[in-house]
Length: 228
View 1 (cartoon, rainbow, N blue to C red):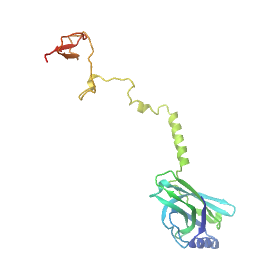
View 2 (tube, rainbow, N blue to C red):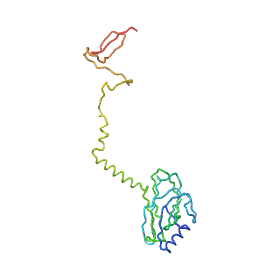
View 3 (cartoon, one colour):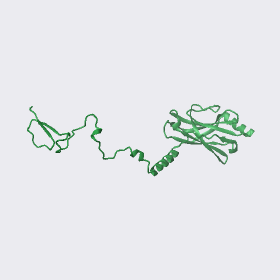
View 4 (cartoon, helix red, strand yellow):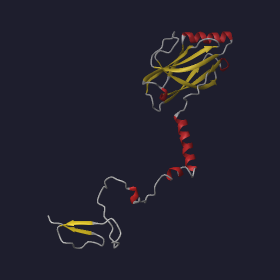
């Protein structure tokens, strides 16, 4: 992706005044837009979202402002066509300073992991004549997220007690419940009573209903013969 940069009418005037008057020009913010802004505009046409300014680096004969666009901060879906830099002289209002037009459009979808980094070059003013307002809010990129996740996983893995609280709430894989836990409802299938010879105790008994005479069976069972 390539970008073509140009000064706006008001931006060129600001740069000329900064040179002539020895004043520092401050880049206040960067913004992304879906329109095509005219050179004499004070504002970006169809401005869609801010692009966070990370910093400024000086090279031979130019100064580069780094701006990062994070799609997760977009309020709506839009087509990215241009990026604008706003700037001001001390004590004055900000104006649209430079325009950078993309050579190909990019669709920006909210709540996606799309992150675009733009290197916006200033070729008139030097590092001593230019300043930037660094944006701190919302600058978490995918790379930073990956490092944070890796650190969290490593910390969790090193903590021997990490799962202790959860495991304390879990029942063993093989466990049982006493009859006191069954307070109502319908059992999901047949329940068979144990056989035994404790005939004098009030126990759950296996009961057989049949028109036939008692035969077979087990100790402790009851056989009831009835006439059909």
